[in-house]
Amino acid sequence: MDICVVGAGYVGLTTSAVLAELGHRVTCVDQNKEKTDLLNQGGIPIYEEGLSSLVKENTQKKRLFFSDQVMIHLSRHPIILIAVGTPPNENGSTNLTFVKNVVQLIAKSMHGHKTIVIKSTVPPGTNEWIIRTLINQGVDRQLFDVVSNPEFLKEGTAVADSLHPHRIVIGAENKQAADRVRSLFKNIDAPVIHTSLTGAELIKYASNAFLAAKISFINEISRICDVYGADIKDVQKGLAADPRINPYFLNAGLGYGGSCFPKDLSALIYSAESKSLDPVLLKAVTQVNETQIDIYLHKLIQHIPEPRNKQITVWGLTFKPDTDDLRDSQSIKLIRQLLQIGCSVHTYDPMADLNSAEVTGHRELYASVRQSDVLIIATEWHQFLEADLEKVKKNMRGNLLLDCRNVLDPARAKKHGFHYVGVGRS
Ligand SMILES: NC(=O)C1=CN([C@@H]2O[C@H](COP(=O)(O)OP(=O)(O)OC[C@H]3O[C@@H](n4cnc5c(N)ncnc54)[C@H](O)[C@@H]3O)[C@@H](O)[C@H]2O)C=CC1
Ligand SMILES: O=C(O)[C@H]1O[C@H](OP(=O)(O)OP(=O)(O)OC[C@H]2O[C@@H](n3ccc(=O)[nH]c3=O)[C@H](O)[C@@H]2O)[C@H](O)[C@@H](O)[C@@H]1O
Image (cartoon, rainbow, N blue to C red; front, side):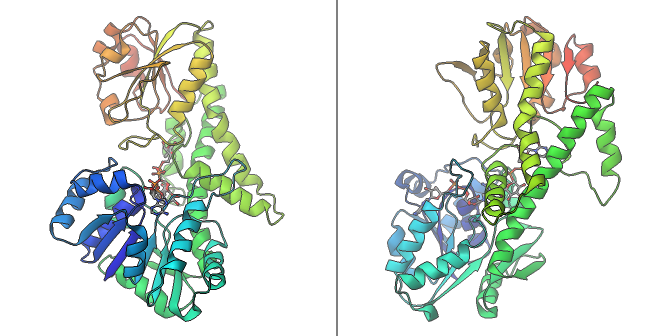
C-alpha cells in the first residue's frame, strides 16, 4: 500500500520504518526540513534502538522516502497517517495546532479517496471534530474516512513495540475503513480491538493514566515504607506475585516524566472537567507525581542541612534510560531545584549532553563525580548499575548517594563507603 506518514518524530519515524519493513511503500513527511534532509542523507534525528538500521535498510530497498513537501504527498497518497505532536497547553488541555494544520492541508489537497488515520494522541471528540472540519471545508463526505489508531510504543523499545504490539486499536465509523487500516498491519500478530472513534481515543488515555496511576501508587506506598521502616522492594515483590497486579510499572522513584504521561493525564483531567466531572483519582495521581521530587530534596537536606555551594553530580538527564528524550524529565526538574537552593550541579548522561551556563556537563562517568559531595542517580541507565563504586567513591569528596530510582544494592553501596539513601528502603 502507498502510505504518507505525517511527522518524523518518535512515533512517525518508527511507524514509517515499521510499515516499510512490513512491505508498504511509505513516504514520511515533516515540515522540519532539517529533519528530512538529515534522513535523506542517511542520518537519524533521534536515538532509538534498532531504528537507524531499519530506516537504512528500507530506504535502500526503496520502500521508505522522506520529504518536507507535505502538501504534495498529502495529495498523492490514499492513506495518510497523522503522527504530529499534541503538546499540552498551559491549562492542561491539548494543543491541537499541529493536527489542525495537517487537516487544513488535507482539505486543500483532496484528490480521490483518502483514509485519514490519526496516530497522534488526541482528546475524546477530536476524530469527530476532524470529520466535521473536513465537511465544513467543503470536502465531499464520500471522499474520506477518518480512523483512530492510537500508538502504544515506549521510547527505548519503540521498534520492538511496534513490530510486536500487545494490541492494535482501531476506532472507525465503518467496517471498510477499519479493514483498510487492519490490512496495513496484516503481518503483525496481535489482538485487534475494534471500537468507535471516541472509544479508541479513550483507550489510549485510559492506558497511559492507568500506568501512571500504578507509578504514583507505588510511590505513595514507598513514602509509607519510609516512615514505618519497611523495604519497598519487598512490598513490590509481594504485590507483583499476584497476577492480577503484575510486576510492571511498580518501580518507586523520582516519578514519571516524558512527553506523554504528564500531558496525557492533564488532558484527560481537562476532558473530564470540561464535562463537569471531578476526576479525583486522576488528580491524585498527578499530585503524587508532582510532589515526588520534594521527597528527595527533603532527604538531601536531612543529610546536608546547608546544601548551598555543595557540589552535586546528577547521573541521568533523560526522562528514562535508553532514550535521548529530555522532554518533561524529572531529572531536569530536580536539577532546577538543586540550582535554586544554591548547589553547584555537575551532570553525566550517556545520550544527552546537558552543559549550560549553570550546569557542568561531563562526557565521562567517573570524571563527573570528581570532588562531588553528593551523587544522585536520577535515571537507571545500565551503565550506572554497573559502575565501579570503589572508583566512584575515590573520586568524590563526600559519600552521600541518593538513589532516586532504587536501582543500586544498598549493601554494595555501603561496602564501598557510601551513605546510601533510596526511597522506601529504610
Ligand atoms: N513519543 C512517544 O513515545 C509516543 C507518542 N505518542 C503520541 O504521538 C504523537 C507524536 O509524538 P512524538 O512522535 O513524540 O512527537 P515529536 O515531537 O517527536 O514529532 C512530531 C513531528 O511532527 C512534525 N510536524 C508537526 N506539524 C507538522 C506538519 N504540519 N506537517 C508535517 N510535520 C509536522 C514535527 O516537525 C515533528 O518532527 C503525540 O500525539 C504523542 O502524544 C504516542 C505514543 C508514544
Ligand atoms: O503515550 C506514550 O507516549 C507512551 O507513554 C509511555 O511510554 P514512555 O513515555 O516512552 O515511557 P515509559 O516506559 O512508560 O516511562 C514513563 C515514565 O515513567 C517512569 N516509570 C516507569 C515505570 C516505573 O515502574 N516507574 C517509573 O517511574 C519512567 O522513568 C518514565 O519517566 C507508555 O509506556 C507507552 O505505552 C505510551 O505509548
